[in-house]
Length: 144
Image 1 (cartoon, rainbow, N blue to C red):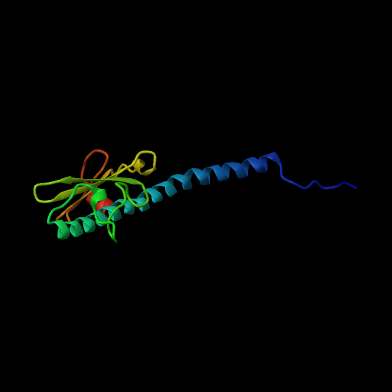
Image 2: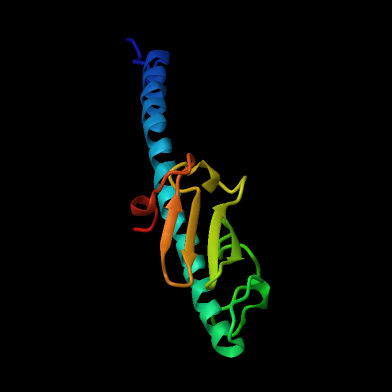
C-alpha cells in the first residue's frame, strides 16, 4: 500500500510566483498613474480657495495680497503656503491688475512624478493655465 503525497511541487510554486510577478508589474504602474491624476485635484482646489480668499481680502482692503498667511482664515483662508493635502507648494505673485496664483508639486511627495502637470496657475480674472515638464501648455489635461 502506497500513500499519496500531498502538497505542491517546486515547479507549481514557481509558476504561481511568475504569474503574480507579471500581474504586479502591470498593476502597480497603472495604479500609480491613477493616483497622480487623482491628486491633481489638490492643486486645483487649493488655487480656487486662494482665489476665493483673495476676493474676500479685496472686499475688505480694496487690494489683493501676495502673502498667503495674511488671507482671512474664517472660512476660506489658508493656514500655510501648501495645498490642503500637502502635495503642492502655493505662491501668489502680483500683476499690474491683480495677482497670479501658482501651484507646483513638492518634491518627495509623489506629485513631482507628474510630468504632464508641473505647474497650475490661476489669475484674479479666473484664467486657468497649466504647464507640463517641458513648459508647454497642458490646460486640457490638468484642469479637467
